[in-house]
Length: 101
Figure: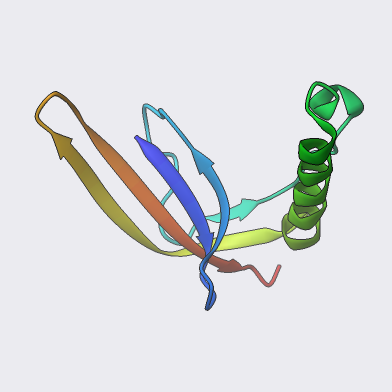
């Protein structure tokens, strides 16, 4: 099972994704506290300079949007991908709004 979180705005901004989960710990109405981890040089030093710059920039953007914020799940979508040669895959999309707390 895969779970994707989106900010329920005009652009449907993606918050994060989780893959290969065995259970679903979330439901509509849940409030979730978000945080964005600080990057350390060990996290990006192994990449080429142009990609390093992108990683640092993307993380700063995440911090501006989601660091120490709370979101509330307001709606969900469930999708099953079927393919004859492999096991079916369930994807759940949660659409969230910033919580007022």
